[in-house]
Length: 361
Ligand code: KG4
Ligand code: ZN
Picture 1 (cartoon, helix red, strand yellow):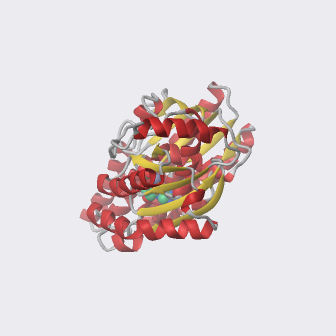
Picture 2 (cartoon, rainbow, N blue to C red):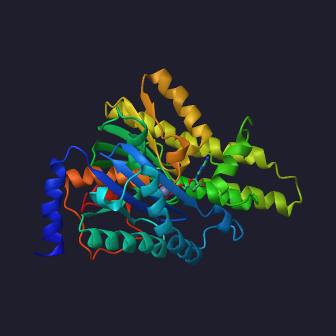
Picture 3 (cartoon, protein in one colour):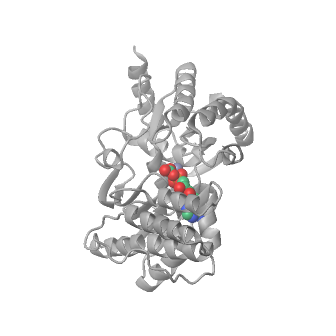
């Protein structure tokens, strides 16, 4: 029997088990992480090794440096994740791994490791989409949270409003036409001379500052659920360059607060409108920018007024981590086929491909 036939058979059996433990691997960008997750919800261990200090010297993530550090980290992290959960490899039922999106070399380290463990242990391999992982971060923190709900995805690479119909089915409501919100934060941070990672610095500097500058006069997409960040980003960059050319003072906290106010408000307005139009009273935040204090604060207030239940992950699950990948892997294992060993990394899988459910990832 071939590997994949054997894995499909095993998957059927695992579905009957009362307890399913998945060892999950995440290495899509600058965090190497290994977690063990039980039944998609309970985190037995979640070890994260961040490379921020390494990449800070370069002002951003250097892909080749990231891959090399993933290689150094991955096996010790698997050992640590098992030790911390008081388990051995014999207790693991399946391997979950991020297949995309992300940096190709970084993804390949996790994917190759996951394939190797799957083959050596003769257990199923589950290929996970990173963005689905960010959504599932909420399942880890909120045992009562189940689909359907509206999800506002705010990450470094994607920005979208989706209807999460079920664990494995999504409907796209609106998305960014150009830059993602996290990308806009990072580019604004860079022009202001803030150190990588920039998004969090913009957030901190903007705290308690009343926004006064209006960068974009008109939202050309106001009638749709789509957003655009390139206009806002360019307006901020031009504003800063003009001040520099004229030798004028640059009020960094004011620029951060004004940019953030516009960037976040255009999204939250649309997400809340989507809740109303689709008759959904649960709104879930997902992605790295879900850590943003202004986004969390303003949505908390607005949802309270509108009687909408708001969920956002605790800080530890906003940043990239393998536990969220383990959660997705569990729900895929319950209803989709496992992956074959010939799958490749998908560095730029688009959100549409996730939404269309063209394949398990
Ligand atoms: O979701 P994520 O891991 O990216 C993708 O998976 O694509 O999130 C990383 C992004 C970066 O752009 C980072 O600057 C941003 O999240 N970010 C923040 C904050 N913390 C992280 N942006 C604004 N405020 C924050 N507090
Ligand atoms: Zn991420």
